Image (tube, rainbow, N blue to C red; front, side, top):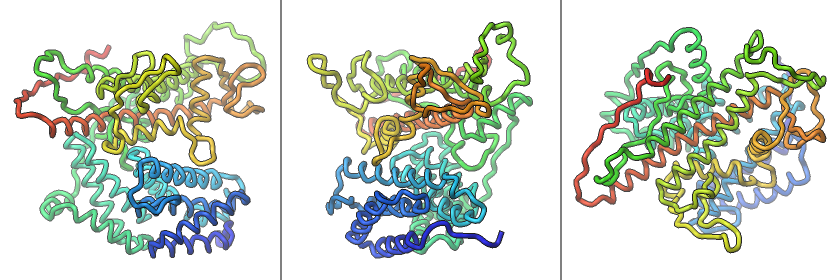
Length: 520
């Protein structure tokens, strides 16, 4: 189609040019004035055609943060609270832009190149913001989205290369580290030849490449990476494993890469080596805790997969179950109940991991009060029941803990002046599944009246099967990220503890793997 139309007014382009000029000149005061001016404008103009302005504002908050400033402060030594507030505003603006770009008014063929061009930049900068939160896996998801839309978009290639360098520094499996560095180097290298990469970004990406020694570049990074291909099993198993690969759900950092290779189709994630007192005869209990967390995740993932695979006929356990047809098109089946179970089990992993965190970091929360919210506090309870505890979690000193903290924020904080989508949808659904009635409907036949976060006048929480699948898949992704972060946080902490060791000798204890043959 040749007659493409730009749906965004010239005012958006004018603001973009002014923001770019201020950023190129590192004119902090000009950026601040533009932010105030643009945000005041957006308070009175909510049309979808102004979506690019939210992108400009979010990007400029990111630029200020990178330069070490905030809108409300000229102090280059920002406090953690000031940095977090700036990041929150950045995330909100990008998410608001997402919402506007999904409006039906903009989903027209004649607008396609203009909307796509904005999405490429938006997704890349949003991934950069997630990376700044420490959220490596979440950032990789959006870099992948960009490369799926345009595999030659240089800014995404350069940034994914930079992000993979950061990711590799947190992974404790040496084989995985080597793979991540190889992909990182080659993404950085490819970005340098792309016309969309501006000169300052090229200089930065080249600097990232130069962190590798000449010997490593020649002997490994410039060589073709030989990756063995493995069988994924018989047809049924292969279909399942391909589904997990495609949705990037294996507990394996390599499954965050855009490439979907068979050798990445394993749940190889495990805790790092740990130092314990010599008098402790048994292996640390944390390995057993993590075994349980992994197994519960894998079970929930399989239940979710089964729900995606619609049956041609009812499950035998559903036959001869007497139910009343009330003509509201509900979905009653073993498959749907399995999906509900998957959702509930996934959500419970957050709190179970909090027990791990409380014990490993010796925080001191009473057992009945431990959950993924309280581990970030320094006291709990009201009145006479209030008590303080020695919170040792330092997200600013452990990037993986920082990621876990921001995942916690997804469910428990408001970003800007908008409700957080996770809090609105996933938390309310979880509470309904645990304590109330949830009716899952066939989406084609059901025309719901109330909003998704409301309980209907019939005392049911109503949701379509497609929405339940969507939220469960989102929860799978974020719980996977939480578990990967947990292993990396322990890895960072163990390295700190080694640095603080006395000259006392330590002896290795080898732990045997739990064989597949025993999992019956």
